[in-house]
Length: 358
Image (cartoon, rainbow, N blue to C red):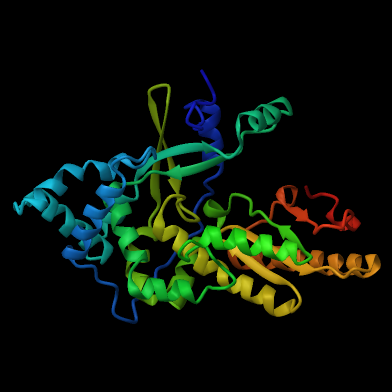
């Protein structure tokens, strides 16, 4: 069977299924928190407005997930003609109740189920090189999930309390900021042009490996208005489906957060914030910048080679501190083989401590 499809997805083979199963560690037990403040409430009108907007944006999308919202597009014309549409009103009411955590606990089990899509991280040439070296494929296990849940969670993480919590993560994190990826890339480019060495880090299987309890604790601490929603969808094991040879395999998502889940990405960033703050506080001369699970450390290098080497040694020490703290607090493990040191123009060598990096 063809292992790589034209759209970048891994083939539905037994090897791919085993790879995905290995990326979902067993659960360690989670306990939700009792809400201490009024919870976010989304109205049906807000949900309906969001659904109509999404249907319009996604109509011509080539995104493999865009079709779900485009199904609602014909209803936009009905709205413009002033007709009453019972279906869209009922969908909006359901989405609003889910986003407000006003549904029975059984919904947590039902709506977290979803098909797994194994997306390749590498392009075709890199995949061929990895296969020639007998390395397993590098995959992103994206949980497509239920459309109603995805629509609801997007509304929740765009609520006032969630946006306020996201702003508190800046400037250390850009993952939840508006145009965050662009700002993140521009800031790193500017630092390098100013003579900074940039150490790019990579967490091994970050989304699935992070402690789910740490995520729940962080949301309770930094955005308690979403505690009930986190309890509903992240104190239960999510069933992920992957078909192999006509048989649907079930892989439980019991730890970490589901890749592709808006609430999961939100919780991941909130949980990582304390680790980044401690790293920045311990290393005053080092700039810490993160885009969700892509964390970077930067330090300005002196022109003197000996001083530059000493500065890079201190940067390596900060990396080791970050790795130990992330492991202890979040169960996250740095993949040193995928970390990379980018030196500014004029610097071509690095101390021995960086030998294992790209």
